[in-house]
Image 1: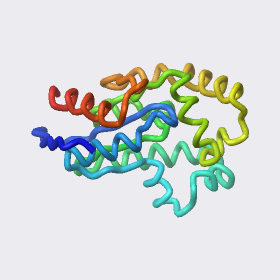
Image 2: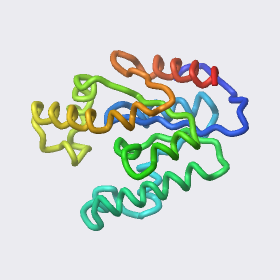
Image 3: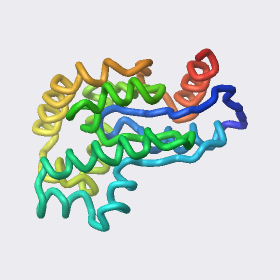
Image 4: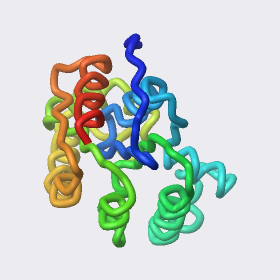
Length: 184
C-alpha cells in the first residue's frame, strides 16, 4: 500500500471503477478508498447482501433479466445516497439499461482497461472462482474475452478516464488514479 493520503475537497465524491472481469476493479478500488479515506463498496457484494443469495444462484433461479434489473436498482441506490464512496462495478453493469448515463451523472468514473492478453492471463489463474469461464480452455477463453470486450467497448469508453492496466502494479494504478482525482 502507498503511504499517500489525499483528502478530497469536493462537496461529494463518488468514484467508480469499471472494466472487464480480471481488470482489478475491486483490488484497486479498495486501495483507492483507503488512500482517500472513503468507504469501499463492491456492487456484486452489495447485491449479494441485499438478495441473500449468490449471483450464481440468482442467475440460476431468477435469470439474467431479473439480475440486471436488480443490479440497476442497487446501483441507483448507492449513487443516489449522500455518502462518499469508491465503488467497484461488475463487468457488465455499465452495459445494461441506462446505467452508464447514471454513472456519468452521479460519479467520477474510471475504466481499468486491459488488453485481451492481460485479461486472459489474469483470468486463467482464477477460472475456478468464475463460473462463467470455468469450463473454457485457453483458446475459448481468449475468444470469449475478445468478444465481450468488443461488445462492451462503447460503454466502457464512456468513462471519464481510461487507465491502461497492462504491465502496471496496483500501486502504479493507484498513483495514476490519484493524479486524475486531484486534478478534478
